[in-house]
Image 1 (spheres, rainbow, N blue to C red):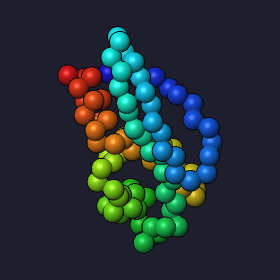
Image 2 (image 1 turned 90 degrees about the vertical axis):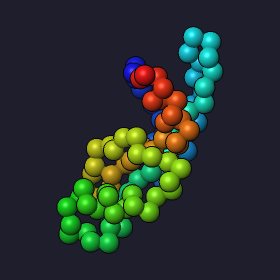
Image 3 (image 1 turned 180 degrees about the horizontal axis):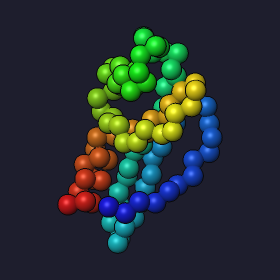
Amino acid sequence: MSHIAIPIPPLQGKQDIQVEVTINGLKQQLYYRVEVFYWDDCANPTAHRADCISEMLAHHDPEWTVYYIGAPTDEFVPITFVKKESRRLLKGATA
């Protein structure tokens, strides 16, 4: 699958992103969400950070699936989700 990078303005909090693409005349809508997860929100902040991410994602909206985990900082980790209907379109592009 091909990738393109789209700069997103740096805004605080959750970002809901809707991308409309036209490829070879076929128009499709893709939905992404970027959320920032703070380490202080982890129930066991002394645990390994991977366990903390897993714990925080365990209660996440099932209509969204993890697409990309960004570079963590000392305070948080940004995680990009893709809506399940968009994920099906992206999987079809690799078939």
